[in-house]
Amino acid sequence: SSLFGHVEPAPKDPILGVTEAFLADPSPDKVNVGVGAYRDDDGKPVVLDCVREAERRIAGNLNMEYLPMGGSIHMIEESLKLAYGEDSEFIKDKRIAAVQALSGTGACRLFADFQKRFLPDSQIYIPTPTWSNHHNIWRDAQVPQRTFSYYHPESRGLDFAGLMDDIKNAPNGSFFLLHACAHNPTGVDPTEEQWREISYQFKLKNHFPFFDMAYQGFASGDPERDAKAIRIFLEDGHQIGCAQSYAKNMGLYGQRAGCLSILCEDEMQAVAVKSQLQQIARPMYSNPPVHGALVVSIILSDPELKNVWLGEVKGMADRIIGMRKALRENLEKLGSPLSWEHVTNQIGMFCYSGMTPEQVDRLTSEYHIYMTRNGRIRYQQRLELFSFFVLFIISLAPL
Ligand code: PLP
Image (cartoon, rainbow, N blue to C red):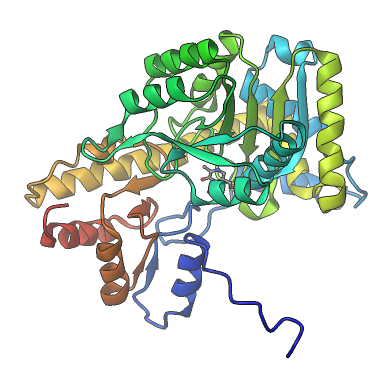
């Protein structure tokens, strides 16, 4: 028998598998609203003007040298300002250990490996539901997982009471994964007041918050506002971890540009932690890619270009907010007996529609519409399509 005869095909990834199935469908009417990437009105990928301009400045001027093990110092500095605030005392005091990471996924994985190596008996609490890859990341890092309540299906909103109970009932000093804004897949975020209560409770329990911030700017249109949850925890004196991604908010998906940061007790601790993060990266990929990091640092360090970026992020967020309004109006105009308030209450890139896996399967097999089986729809297709969804959803038994 052959050496690899026992290797079975891996189960399809619930998100990337949708794209594979979409590509294999010969129908000219097919539509993919599965993968989380922003699209224009024709369903085409979008490259931001600020990114094109940064690339023009790079063209012909860049050598191809390795970055340091921890990545671009310049890009890290700009990333920290974005997450912790331009004038953050933690940046001034050099209390933050930070490395460039392979986008948000790589930042989460690096943190999970760090957690396993230095706190081998710890667990990670992950919200229900969450981005499916969170489970894979902490599983492969061999950190045991627990879940905490997050989404309340009946109200299609936050299960705040359940969430607070789970925070209270977790052993003191637990690690929690929190979506900093635009929770994926539900689009449901705590209010500022609720974040304050969560932070207060974390303090009492001495829990460690790890913020996955994959959509800074995509929720409200303003990256500063979207960092509010993190800032509240910082004000309350927590140590935190943070994964940043430029995939969505700069449209740098395939460039794998991101940052992992850990706020430490003092500079000495930060130096030690950073060196250990580099040590984990070294045998995996040695050092991170240079091009995306350069694009990010050029945009964020030039006030004019940064303004272009801020305008473009706002443009993307506002366009999605507009689609939410239009979708809800269409649904109500068409006489749906159901409440669609959640469509406009949710924020970020997705509509957590409430469709069942079976309903999603029918959309795919009968209408060639591809999406994840949890009913998550990415908001960037033409509105006609949403009217179609509307008709389809209405034709079904109440959800
Ligand atoms: N975290 C969340 C919640 C996400 O939704 C995503 C992307 O969909 C990521 C992290 C990571 O994306 P990337 O690795 O492309 O930055």
